Length: 299
Image 1 (cartoon, rainbow, N blue to C red):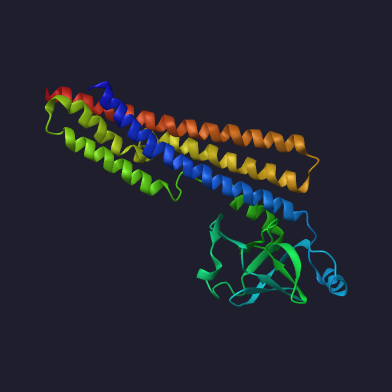
Image 2 (spheres, rainbow, N blue to C red):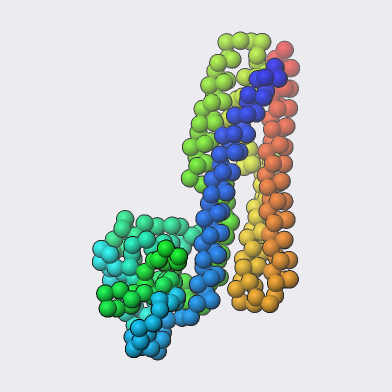
């Protein structure tokens, strides 16, 4: 097997199975981080209640930021009406960022693609309460885009639920990953077929063929043992990250403890990544050894 062939196969593996999916990981995590920062910021803003609303109605003050939890009462093309206690507050849909907690994950949604679907659903809204056409309304501004989160939990569990949903799940499987893996697998299959007619390159054919299935290796023994450990460490990382976020929100004075959990999250995530690599490596070695024994037996 020529070194150039090995480098070509390794390049396909690294780029299509590694670099592109990891770029998707970075993009997704960046979006989640921006959301968490904005969410932590709005949690420090006052809660809009009936008394505050009446005070705002009596005076023409500057636009201020508030947060509100309630239920969706009705919708129109441009406005969403949210009911909370004795208040019915309009929310402008234009430029608002809507999210939905689904199976403990945070999903960005396009409101106009789901008209009327979420009536009576619980919603958390935060942003500027601006004066518009003689009334106050939640609306996005250039400085502070409006955020709204649809949820299905009790209000006292809302903050940890949102923080947990915005944390790092299995981000490797993102919008880029399936296409990247398909292209990578196709490239390796083409490589395998192109060398089939040349017996001198049998090692290249076997290597390329094995490489096609590398994304599946973490789910087969003996590598699955490392995958199980990887999942355990990833869950530990998520739990530590959520704990660090909650300490930062509810107990800002506990910075030292929050840093401890942040460091624990980083270490656990690094360990999880190493376990995945070790699991793939173990299966590559196992399959390669079996293939080599078979070839020698045939010879």
